[in-house]
Amino acid sequence: MEPTVTNCSDSTGSAVAGTESRPSARDSILSGLDELCCLTDGLLAVALHRDLVAARVRVAEDRFNLVVLGEFKRGKSTLVNALLDRDVLPTGVIPLTSVVTLLGPGPVERLVIRFIDGREEEHNLDELAAFVTEACNPRNVLGVDVARVELDHRLLHAGLELVDTPGIGSIHSHNSEVARGFLPRVDAALCVLDGGQPLSQGERELLAEAAGRVPRLLIVVNKLDHLEAQDREQAVEFIRSALRDVLAGQEAELFPVSARNRDGIDPLVNRLRRLAAHERETLLLRSVARLARGLAADGARAARFEAHAIELPLDELAARAQQFEQRIAELQAASAEAADLLERGVARALRDRINEPLSEHAKRDAPRLQEALHAHLRTLDRQTPRELATELEHWIDQTVRDEFERLVPRFESELADELTDLERRYAARVKRILEQVQDVAQDVFGARASEVLPDTGLRAPSRFTFKLKDVEHALDIIVGFGRTITPGALGRRLVIRDAEQRLIEMTDRHAGRLRSELATRVSTAALDYQHDLAAAVQGAIESIRDAIQRATDDRRRGEDHARRRLDELARIAQRCDQLAAQFDRRSAALELEQ
Image 1 (tube, rainbow, N blue to C red):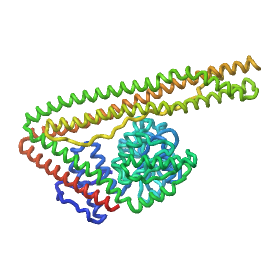
Image 2 (image 1 turned 180 degrees about the vertical axis):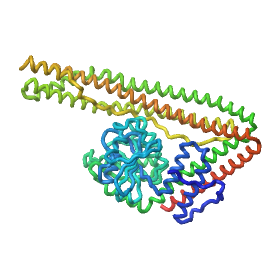
Image 3 (image 1 turned 45 degrees about the vertical axis):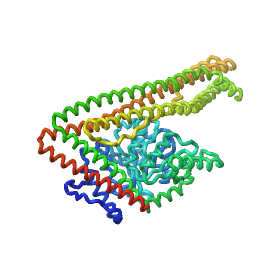
Image 4 (image 1 turned 135 degrees about the vertical axis):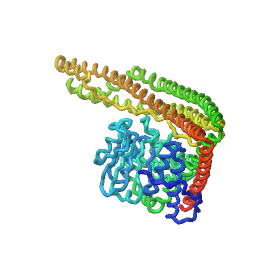
């Protein structure tokens, strides 16, 4: 739904005082958003203008976004199901794809899928997994924009829309940007942590970022059922202490729960009901006012940059455009060099942390695994070859699974640490390049076109998924032959010999599969990340090029036209400044009300 915006020429430019009544505060913000949408259309980057339009729609439709944030496997979807007291969202170890799921009120239960191309389809609620899970919709090949679930539920009818996002730090390379990209639309957030895990660096960064953007932040410490009773309070206090550092001394609203068992859910539900009853409208208006303030200021910068370009004579403008392109070519080369450094760093991390250790794993651990097999054999009663083969098949499958369940977290953790360091260094380079793009614009044209930098983050690799049951086990074939030809003690010895061989072969096979899986996922993540940041750099450059081209076109249409456009840009910049101040005062006044 697109909002209706006012005609820019009808604006009076008057500021709004912070003492108005609530209806007037809402009307003032709506009016300011209408005007700002109109003023900045074609000046702001497309993504930023889209955020502005979406904010206007949320205020107009009184839609309050309570977003559930957290890293992969923190139990976000399970928590949402517990809040609604029914299983609505798919849960388990398979991560969600790059699709945001909205849960809002409705008279009847239904699922509406909105696609990126604008189509909408209505489906049964039990079809949700087909659109929002990686298993059914890998890398969002279906082109889903948003999945909206409508339920007749008291918490949702209280005015909250629950938003389940893909995980920050998700194990799929395309998920984290979706979640971070939703932060400008967040009015309040539930950040879900794991009570049995220390705060990761990614969680610390997420919490610090959310605290700076979101008017109300609630912290859920989940999975307390995984801890012994005597350890739970200690774990909660440890997280509470860590949060004080992350939130710069601010005391967090913290809710210890076990979403799976619904323990501790009632206090959280009661808090959300109080939020809906007493804080919802103010938080929504604060959130939107804060977003609009920043975009209004950036709109003023964009207008002034274009004005500086128009003021130049046409030949001077062409010369400076050429100078800009020469300087930008250097920055693009630096961006490519940074991407190459990331690529080489990822290849080195895979070699040192994954390939070499795993290639030696089966050989190094063969004696230990064989000893474990013989220890298990000593616990078995005398069995026929057929019975023994069946028992050892199950034991080997479980042993190999347990072995890799033990190994995978260590490999993932070591790899994630190295990738995080690579990401920070690469992101710092690209951030500096983005700043230099604006520096070049200021050097060449006398003004910066924007101060907005994109949110970026390198995503962690995929978790290894097992496929232990092959179409036909070598052991099955050999044992079948042995049962027919070699009964008795000799048949048992053959079964044991083949079991020893299969145990090592299975271990080596899955080590190779893990190497391949992690290498593919990490390489894809790094490539996607390179594309993301390359697109951010290119987008900043293209925005400036567009402004230069508009200025050139205006100059070619004659001095009178250029002067009228300069006057228009001056009015736009002035009015954007006024709107930024208006939204700032409104945000401060609303904050004082709480």
